[in-house]
Amino acid sequence: MSKDLNIALLYDFYGEMLTQKQAEAIDLYYNEDLSLAEIAEPLGISRQGARDNIKRGEKQLFELEEKLGLVKRFMKIEDKLDDVLKLLASMRQYEDMYVHSHKLAVAMKELSERIEKIKEDL
Image 1 (cartoon, rainbow, N blue to C red):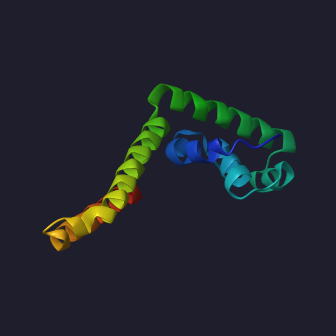
Image 2: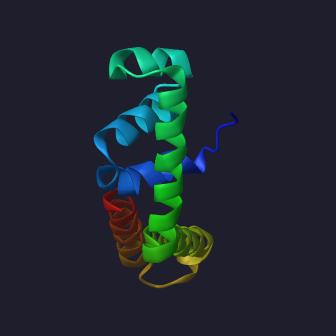
């Protein structure tokens, strides 16, 4: 079974909507990098049961993303914030050309910090 690392991101958004066994199996498989046998033991299920729970959970995660689109929206916002940060960084090279360059520099720094805070809160 090959690992789709996007599942870990989907799990972060939708993991609480899975059954307990599906959530535990996916967490152990993707976040803890355990084998199916290592997952089966603490869950009290067979290796095949662990695989089935992972597969059903993955399917559920993809369906939730298809319906709700939270991860897609999150990535889009993060990309836009990165673009704004790049623009601010490129503006810094011109700040000495302005009369009030110190005030501009302070404002740009504060704006950058606020954008970084928004990204952290996402």
